[in-house]
Length: 150
Image (cartoon, rainbow, N blue to C red; front, side, top):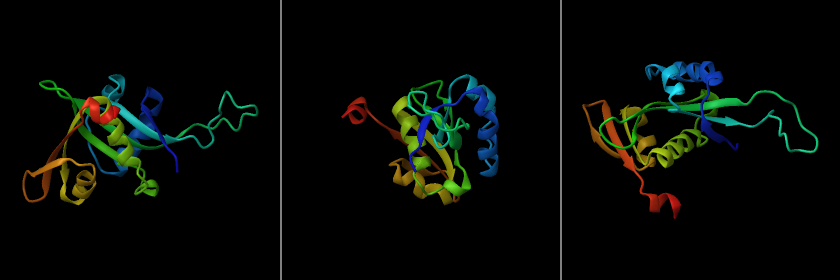
């Protein structure tokens, strides 16, 4: 499945809330994060009209399959991952990875706090991980311009 990642708009709020609620995450004020362009969504183009095609297909709305909510760091560059979630049926297809990768390209540095059960996800994304307690961890990953461009 091919997905594309873009900055979320106000029309995406309900889909984002449903995805995040289903994952039982609490990212704070999602509406404010959307207004500040700090939310990215991954969607598929199945059913979306291509205005440049000779014979446009159906004009159904894009399906939002995942979202990442970021909170910019105030004292340093980068952002904190407040939540990253993918619809249950679409997990394990690289959508979460694509969301984090795109957020990292944009922010250059990301931090996260997470439970032990999602540690393998962050390890695979090369986060430097340290324990907070027996069940929680925090991680940091950064990319230089050369790594992203080259």
